[in-house]
Structure formats: structure tokens, C-alpha cells
Image (cartoon, rainbow, N blue to C red; front, top):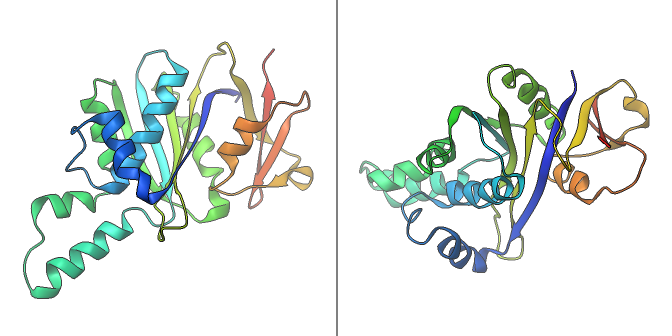
Length: 217
């Protein structure tokens, strides 16, 4: 089954710049959401802004560690002292929060999932997006990871899958040519799709599964 990919968006934000970026984009709207959800929303909204369109939306994103740093903070600040986690501390530990926040922003979200995936398992995302397109008009797919140090940027990469062609969309399908495909990871497959401008299809592999991305025109 062929699907179409729009608006591959690669977001990198230095930890010191992150709070200001969130305030500039969302004002105080996400103040209590926690950093992982804020990071998801920054990239997801940038992708939706670039893609345009409307219709029922599925939201599917992956992370290797999720809201790990919020969970560690909850353990250090509250549970270690034998106290229950405060409500907003607990909320920040929930990796699925971004889907609810997108729905609150008037997007017609019909289903969401946050998956924990190792680096080479990213082909699970377009495969699952294909299935979801049986009941959604569009599926927003992301790979999100918080930085663990001040010298490494936060990552929030997203793209939009849809059933029908659209201006500027890439045609996407599973490829049987895994041996000739380039290795890719959850960290770089969306940026590589975004940077691709050659006439030949782009073949990327994760594990033993490969995908082809090609111009539709």
C-alpha cells in the first residue's frame, strides 16, 4: 500500500533555549505540561503548520526514553521522602500527554499512541501509520527525545502521512530492496527525508525493514 508523506520537520533546540521557545510558541498554555510533552508539541505543531489541511488525525510518536527526566525528578523530589508525587509532577511523567494536548488545540484527534522503540525500529511507525489511515484522514508521526546534557539538543522530528497525493508530498512504500538501502535510525530518518532532493528514490532501512521515499511528480 502506497501512502504519502508531507512536511518532514526536524526540530533541534538547545536546552538553555528551550523554555523561551515554548513560551514564544504557546505563551503560558503548556506551562504545567512537563518538558517532554512541550517538546512533542513544538515539533508536532510545526509539522502541522507546514502541512496544512484538515480531517481526522491520528498521532503516533516514538521515543527511546520518553519522559525519563520527569520520572527521575518525581522520584528525587517526592517519592524518596515517602510522599505522594504532586499532581503536576505526576502529569509531567506521562508520555502520552501530547496527544491530549493536540486535541485540546482543536485538532480532530481520533487516536494516539506513544511507543518506546530502539534506534533501528523506526519502520514500525510508517507501518502502523498505514494501518491507521484506514480510519484516519491523516497520521502525524514523530520521533522525540529529550537531551540528557546541556551540550546536546532536544529532538522533535515529525511528518504527516495521508492516503491521497498532495502538492509537495512524497510517495512512501515498503521496499524489498533492504540490502541496497542505507541504514537509518529514529534520530535521523525524518531529517534525511527532509533533506532529500534527488530524482532517484531514497531507500532507508531500520533493522531488516526498508522504506522507499520518492517524488510523486
